[in-house]
Image (cartoon, rainbow, N blue to C red):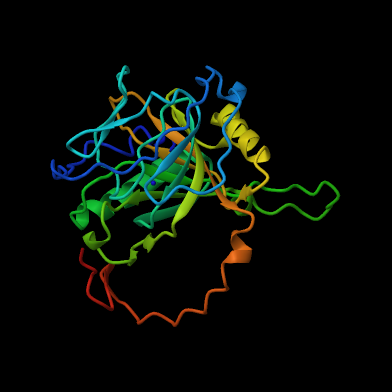
Length: 304
């Protein structure tokens, strides 16, 4: 929704966080696949395990890395990594799988989540900083507690046609567009809609191949060259899987904390489209009233 990639060093500033119910059950994590320990350089990872089916929402399957190195959930809803000083203090959205240990690669499925998005064009680090204030104002104005991670969706790579002699577009038109998001812990914390330039939407269930990172801020593809190569190497070795979206990063930690983030590549089984019937065209949603930058839902907020 980190990062690091979107943990933006200032993105997850000291924000009040509601403690989780200590009795709440931890997010499910699928048993790890026993494989060889990960190499220090993620671009030189050991032989990776195959995965034929997507994990259930909220679960993860270890593809590469030390199978014994698994995050442990805290009573506040965050995570620690045994044997290290890594710690995530803010809770994750309900139903989210545990963060991936640095250097490990996992196949994970995320349930639908409600998130506040801010889209901005420019360089990735500048985009992260520009997105902070409107997103922070949104959650504080609506009394929505901060969660982890902060998500950053990368733009699709631009293709340059060297044979095109047409006049270049303005720099502003060529600037990559980034989407930075704060995630709601539960969908009943607020309605979808708009709040100024912030858009609140529900995401689709998503399966990704992810690699854990602990060596700095993830700000665009130039900062995760080896990690991206490791993800694409696994994908290229799996004939039943294909890319289903653009890269995204999760930043789990904030200022004063050791960085812990992930680079993720959305994937799907190649036969998924053939098995899934075409979805009917949804009816147009009822209009939502908007006053003073606040959105009133057309229907009552869902309850759990």
